Image (spheres, rainbow, N blue to C red):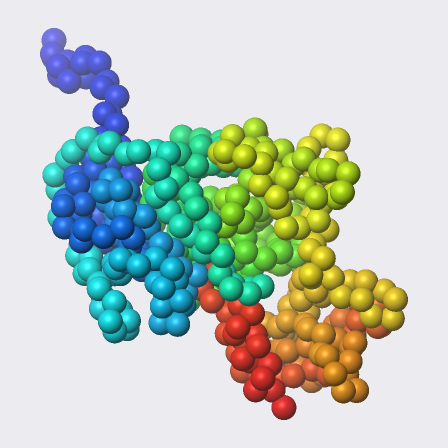
Length: 443
């Protein structure tokens, strides 16, 4: 009688926590034990300074710098842009800062630290962190003015990540998180760095940008992929051809996702997208599947509190105190809510009111419009009338005909400017400064 091999009779050993996959870095699978070894080595080499501008583009290296800095008691500064003027504007408020990046930044006069790829071969235990100490200062995008600093600790990110992955149904799934948004932006930071750090999701170190590059990453990944992206990127991705069969989910944030774009995403990418709602101040705290629900569902444990004055606060386990929200909401009895927009976003023409965000969404949904936005032009004969800026081969009449079924006639643009491109940042947002610069150059 043939003897059964001993290893078949042996009890199956559960993998130790340090053996669990954490990241895909340069095509190599990195375990949590490798991660903590790399963090310890990185921490030894960082300059002895209070603040670090983490400008790493590679997400694994970004994660190492952030965690190594936290283990040293340094605070990671996350600017909304790597442009010199933006960095210098923040640097003046945080003396003693240095820049960490894989390549020499174009920031003369600032101390910088070259981040080199670690060997990722050794294994170590997790370092001791002060979870309640400030670890990150993220800055708002500047879409409404000067970037605002938002202070967070590691405990905030841990609790928030646990709430998010649980509410979204990711749980213990080993899915590869691929993001088109840089880790310096809160949406990219949460989904592509902290969600994998505090779950079984796997961090992907790349930053694919062009549509076919994104599709190829998804197609060739060794495990199913969750794609965290923006409506701006989705408009390009829905124009691709080829297989998206390895895609397990699509997340969208940074601006409203229209039902039309959601339908196109579902048809072309094979996944009904889920929107994430949050801010740099609050992190994400709600989601909705556009094709199946119009209301936002808060993560379990989060809730909106409305005062008689109309102000709305977010109360959530990851926040030490309730945070005042900038949008206007309609909150249902079961806790779900609708976003009505911001007062500064509302325009009033001919006694009627409309949301600029909704007008922008309708504009970009027109077939043949690649990008665009609306604004109210002040002064002269155009005072109080809407103007549109578009990237499109259509003529003005085509733009107006595309808007007419959805927009009151008083909100049809009096003038339409055609441009080659709109200077959005990597998160798909148009900052106030860039918009003003673009408008100043229009005829």
